[in-house]
Amino acid sequence: MGSKKILVVEDDSFLLSMYSTKLNLENFKVSTATTGLQALKVVAKDQPDLILLDLNLPEMSGFDVLDNLKKDVGTKDIPVIVLTNYSQKENIDKCFALGAVDYLIKAHFVPAEVVDKIKKILNK
Image (cartoon, rainbow, N blue to C red; front, side, top):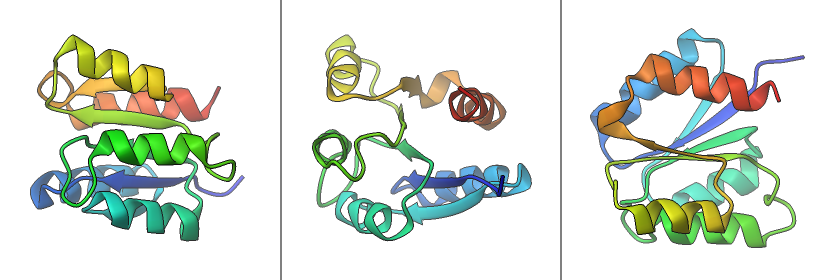
């Protein structure tokens, strides 16, 4: 089995770089997107094994990206972990309703824990 492909969708360049580096060190193939629309393009091209998705994105929100992914027969089965600063219950409920497999609040998780979550989901 080759290395799994992870798409990190994050508009904060520091966080994007931090998560990309951490995932690369764990032997994942990482692609990145900094806007919602770019994320959908990368997914169509790369077919990642898992998507780490921020909600607060330019052009198209993470909610809309998630909604689009789950409505598309070609991408609906790709697990999406939402990684965001939004901690409101209605946002969490909305993401699970849209089909996210996990919802992580950035302030509560260090990158190593996020990587552990990714590994658990990919090993299911």
